[in-house]
Image (cartoon, rainbow, N blue to C red; front, side, top):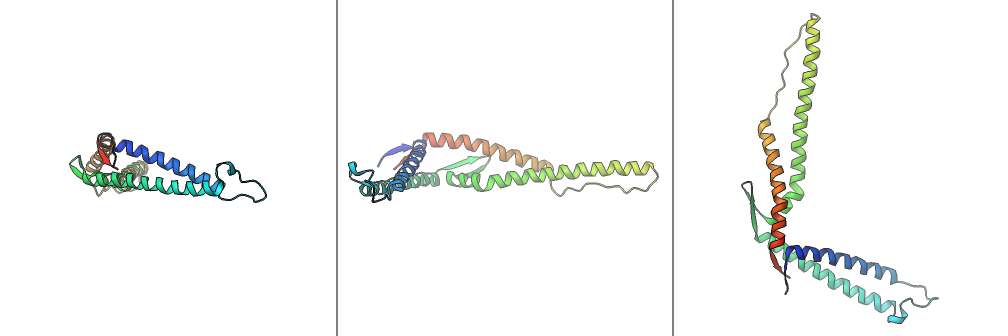
Length: 182
């Protein structure tokens, strides 16, 4: 088993993925050839041999990739991190960042924007009503009713931004300082 930092392991994942893709292109290129022509790889044992070797190599590289990803995942499940009073494992934070945070952030922005639009619309209606009142028409008083605490919404949006900002920094430090066994 080899020991490496998670940052190194993630770089290895990229390298392995690139190597797999290159080998897949070689296999695709030499999987067939026209029998009327000389095998383009006849000097190095032939296309059949090359394809067989490349397929075996791809399989080995894929296994290495799986081993690295599993080692990273195991470490991510073992280590916890606390941000803004919330403690989760690294794996949970990664899932939260990918699957929850974008939707939550978007929802809070849409909600805040919706309140602003309603407030602006009401202001416009009040101005029109004021103009009608000057002309002598009866006007009802209209108020905007907001069914949530806007200050709390703004604070939770800010907290979300702080968590996301801090999370990226903490994950970078974690990956750069944490070793795994592969």
